[in-house]
Structure formats: structure tokens, C-alpha cells
Image 1 (cartoon, helix red, strand yellow):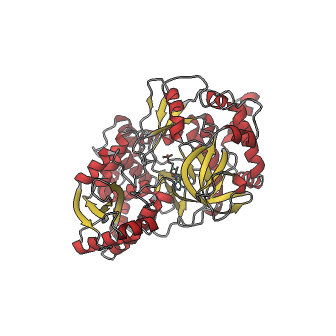
Image 2 (spheres, helix red, strand yellow; image 1 turned 45 degrees about the horizontal axis):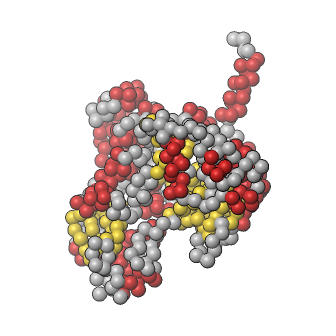
Length: 585
Ligand code: AMP
């Protein structure tokens, strides 16, 4: 037996301690933390301020090393949005290493998807954000695994993509938040500790070509099909996109497996070589997959057919991802859909500790040590934010974050509703992005309102066995009066009168009083439905990927502003038919 250096042994033990995952212990830690949520919040703010009081931003507001309590902090530091922070973050991107927002220079900058503004926005990424990510993954996994235990030696089919990371002119690495996470040296060990090792080799995750990466994720998943314990993408859109792609490429995948030779469409050398190492001629597996695919009716239950030991499908399915849930359920068959947690490039907020709830019912429990959280009531009369443990059940609030990554009293722009409490910490439901997306005069419609209108009109379409693949909108004020334009990509051909009905239904679907009264008195014109060619929304996605968005973090912009000329052009140029509502004639 080789001699073991005692010190080395000790460090190995330590390493093991970090890596070992103890489900009950993680759950207990969360129980304890949530029971003391108020105290944990005070301590977290203190810790954030102690670490960062030397930041120029905080000093400018009179914060010093003695400011540690919430009241003093709130009296000095104003509520802000990304707009006010932009000049500070720009200095960091430009390479200024003075303590601008944080006590120490940040190691990287995240590029949030920013699809709603039409431009990506920068936010700081720090080691603490990485630690928070691992903590949140472990917490959510513990609760998930208690309900849906997975096998120790299993793997996860994860549709994850690390988009391009570049170095700013000031020398700071810039990438999407997920890219910064996937590239972090602690990511892999963190995932391994929660039995969530990816099926695909790293080269696939880091592939510069996302189409090739997606193909290889699918192929790797099938090669490890018996080991796959769950299927994941950050967003439901990513899952649906992956299996829609599978419908198109499955025969090629089967051929690769049969021959043991990778299709020539994979051209990135690192990806080709990594994938080729996994492939051996396996006619038996190829036959099984072929038979499974041919036996499915309209691909219902595709996921369990491909991955017989999968216990659930996991990803964000709430908020703007709700429109994809129906299709995902179709692919998932009987498998449970488990909603992924609530966070953003700015930082994690809440974990799903009730994973059995369906996506429609999913709630998230705020993890009180991830930041200092305030909640700004959405009702127009209340202007002051309240603390984490002072929120009221049933009320809606905008989330305000103070965290370890240089954001202080930062309005995230998300609206959440308080559903209840888990011990002392609130459990919330994601409602929508705060920004109104459709408004011409007194009408006020949010992304959620648009979604509900589209859902009701899509029901008319489903009578014809056709679905809405994706949608977006635009306010057209070049006409007098202005009107709403809804873009739809649909899955098949149908009669014009069906689409005319859908158009009327969309118009009637906006039940906001301001909209309805403006429509009745014609200060807002007839809603217009433009049906776009198949594949148009894919082009929109590609446009954003070209701007640096990551495939995994992608969210379809639900409203295209005139400033976003390129996307508007793609949608308008690909319109194949137009309908004007007669609902208020
Ligand atoms: P990003 O800016 O790309 O990091 O995206 C973060 C945004 O995605 C959040 O501010 C939310 O609007 C949305 N989001 C994140 N998690 C969820 C969730 N669980 N449910 C609904 N929306 C979410």
C-alpha cells in the first residue's frame, strides 16, 4: 500500500468534504436559514457592506466601515436601475481597476441576455456569485432529490452552451452569466457533487457553433441513454428547441450510431475529436432508437422513449417560458416537469423547494443569504420597499437586490407575487417583467397580458390542430391611430377565416380597461396579426446569438421596439399574411 502523507490525506479529506453532498444536511441548513430569515438578512447586508464599503459608489453616498445596519444603508443609498449603474460598469469594462462598485476588482463581467431592451447589458460577476450559484444548485437539488431520487452513477442530459467569452478593450473577460459559470473551475466539481455530470464532453459545451453543439448534446444523450437521470436546459424554450431539432436530425443521429462515424456536419475540430472518441459502431442501439422514434405518435412521450431511466425534465418553465410548457409536456409524456429556480445574471434569488408542483403552480423560496432583498410594492400608492420578511401574502412586488457583486438597491425589473412563507422566508411566484411592453396612450399591457391574449387566440387555432410556435409583438405608431402588431409563427397551413378569428380573439384578449376603451373609441387602431414564414423566429434567435447572447439563456423578445430595427426587419420581411381585427367594428 503506498505511503500516505498525513497532510496530503487531510487535504484530500477536506476536498472530499467540499465535494460530498449530504441531502439531509443541505435541507437542514436551508430549514435553519429560512427559520431565521430576518436575522440572516441583517447579517448578509452587514457582510456585503463590510466587504465593499471602500467602493467608490458606496463612498459617494456616505457609506463607511461603520455603516452596517439596514436602516442607515437604506437612508443613504438610493434605489436604482441598470440605467444609473451603466456608467460605473462601463468604467470596469474599460479596465479601470479602482474599487468602483465592489471593494475588489471584479474578475469578469456578465452580459445579460437583454433581449427585452434589444441590447445586451453588462453586470459584474464575482467569486461570490459563483459560490451562490453552487449553493443554490445544491439546495434545489437536495429538495428535488428528496422527491425524485436519482441514481448515484447517473448523468444529466444538459443542453448547456457556453457562448463566446471575449476580453474587453480594458482587459476584463466578458461573457454571459452562464458562460462565466460554466467556465469557472468549480463548476464541474459542483455538478459532479450533485450527480449531475453532463453527458456531453466539455468541448461540446464550449463549442463556438451552437447548432453543432446541440446536435452533439442530443447524440451524447443517446449514447448515455440508460444513465440519463434527468433532462435539463436553463429555459423551457431551450428544451423545446432541442427536441424540435431532434425531430429533424434523428435519422442522421441513428446513422452516426450505427456506423460509429460522426456526421460530416460537425466540423469544429475539438468537437469532432471529442465526439469521435465516444462513438463506436452500435447497430443495436441504432435500431432501438429507430424503432422507438417510429413507434411514437406525433412524437408524444419522446423524452422517456429516448431516456428510459429519466426521472424528470428540468428548466425554467414559469413567466415568459409558459408558452412552451404545452409542447414540453407533449415531449415529456408522463415524466414530471420540474421548474428550475429563480435568478438572473445579476444574482440568484430563490430556490424551488417544492419540486412536485406543476409549472403552473411553481413557487420559489427566497434564499436569505444570497443577498439583501427588498420588495417594492407594485400598487401605485405604495412607494417604499419592504424587507424580505415583511412582505404580504397575495401582494405583488418588484424585486430589489443588494448583493456581493456590486449591486445596491438595484431594481431588477421583475414582478413577483407572494404566495406564502417557507418558515420565515417568502415563497414567490414569478409574474412578469415590470416594463409595460405594449402601450400607446392610456393602455397598459405587460408581457403577461400579451401571453394571455396569445393563449386564448391559440386555442382557436388548436381546434385546427395547429400550434403557435412562437410570437412577438410591436407597437406601430406610424399609422394614425397607432395599433398593436402581433407576429405569429404557426405550425401549419390553415384557412384565412380561422386566422381572422384568431386576430379578433387577440384583440379581445387584451382586457385592460385602457386598451378596451381606446379601441372602442378608436384612439387605438385595429390589432394586426402578421403570420410569418416557418423558421423566422429561429432567424431572430440567431441574430441575438450573433450579438453575444447565449443559446442557453435566450429569451424571445416579446415586444420589438423601433430601436431594435434588425429584429423588426426580420419579422416584417418574413410576414406571409396579415389580418386586421374586426372585433371592435
Ligand atoms: P438574464 O438577464 O438572462 O440573466 O435573465 C434573467 C431573467 O429571467 C430574470 O430577471 C427573470 O425575468 C427571468 N427568470 C429567471 N428565472 C425565472 C423563473 N424561474 N421564472 C420566470 N422567469 C425567470
